[in-house]
Amino acid sequence: MVDNQRLSDTTVAAVKQAVQIVPVIQSYIQLKKRGKNYVGLCPFHGEKTPSFTVNADKNMYYCFGCHKAGDAIGFVRDMEHVGFVDAVIHIAKLLGISVEYQALRESDKAQLDRYAMVYKALDLFRLCCRDALKSDSAAQEYLKGRGISPAVLDQFSVGVTPQASVQASVGGGIPESVLVDAGLALRTESGELVARFRHRIVFPILDHRGRTVGFGGRLYRTDTGPKYLNSPETLVFNKNRLLYGGYQAKAAIKKTQSCILVEGYMDVLAAHTHGLCHTVATMGTALSDAHIDGLKDSTIILAMDSDAAGQAAMTKSSQALDRANVPVQLLDLQGLDPADFLAQQGSEGFYQQLDTALNPVEFRLKQLMREGQPDGQAKRAMVEAVAPFIQRQTDPIVRQHYIQQVAKATQIDPTIIQDKIQLMAVNPSMKKRSAARPTAVSKYTKAEAVVLCAMFLDEACRARGVAEIQIAMIHTEQNQALFQALATATGALSLEAIPDAIRSDVAKSMMEYDTTAVADFDACLALVQDRYAKQRMQAIKASIREKEAQGDDAAIPPLLAELNQLLKL
Image 1 (cartoon, one colour):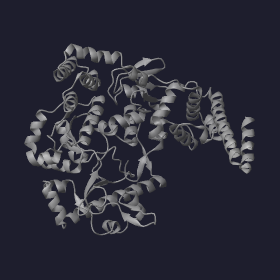
Image 2: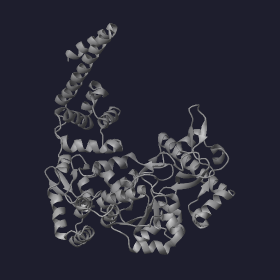
Image 3: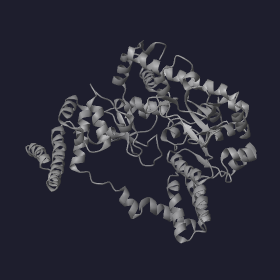
């Protein structure tokens, strides 16, 4: 986008009409024809058996493994880590389509103005907090005591909440509604505007372009409230997509091809103070798919707290990274959190620990060994705990190396362990087989999926569905959300028009029913209505019996009238 202009509708329409999803995806991964679809190994998660499915006719893909779904533009967005406009421009250049711009619509200008005001409010608050730190000796002493250098404090723009109100902190010209939108303030039940961050050391959070999008705050001078507090989800802040320090660490991560992942703000600041400038942190959340997607070109070094919660996070994060085929190492910080470890042993001690970093198998075995000398049952549990990781290794040398490590830890012959792992791969336990066995889909469940699929594909089916279906007839929350999205949609639809939370459900239904959905719409609509009528009649009969028992005769006639109406259907 250029100033006061946006990508033209004709360019977007030309790209959507001309793009063929199969060649686009084949420029990234290999696909093989299978029936009407194409299949390949999913680029979004590690797998050995292809579950990534592409439907050329519908210009969409769906992974039956990780449930990622979208169209050609969405695929480029995910692979290139860009927004919609950049993805369209990327495809336009591939197809030789001229990229044109047009004047912004008034609605676009209003939205951009809103975003601009939010960014402005956040940055003004950052600057005010940074300046407030200069005159706050208590906060300065705390940060100095944690060993954070002035240069790093300045680089990360660390500050403290000012004594003034949030309105005064950002200056005039920022409406109260913008302060709420930015997550800087909230309204009480009485309507009073109050600051979200008070009595806190403040850590600004930047996006990939270096813009302030949120804050983390640590209490000081008081014990009232949670120790740490983050900005809420806003127009510009989503903690499941951002890592603290990600912008500051970007160059170092690219240079070293590695990334140290910690848990806390202070851990990041301490690491950068000691020259470990490729360090980032999650912000009170588990490592998400979006986090992993942004780190997949690096080796990840997990250095989390040594308490039970930190160790559990290490295990969970290492499993998620391994499933995504991202190289991962885990550090044992000798019972300390990263900031305290660096304060005691410095970067030299950290690098010594890095030289002896554990792979996920070693780490998990070490955890289990701490529980005491294992007996036969415990040894079996140890093998089963690390088997999934070993099964995912495609290099036979690496695989054998891990088997030898398990053999050494359990004092079991490596051949026996290898046989056990192979047995688990081809013949899982009855419990796991039962969990993995797909449950039978009832005719009503299938009918509901077909109706919604037809409403997505065909405007006439959509109009009839809106007219003849009540939200109560739809059973699952996901399908209710989809029905509501379809009910307000106009014109031909693409997957990009469907909310992210339910897009994969739509794609899955499309893969299964798209060729027959419109033809089967009438029969399936009748089934959906029939199920509702039967269930509603049962509920009414139960209510009539209850009212009779209570002697509430006045409540019975309306129920009988509704029952008679349902019986006529």
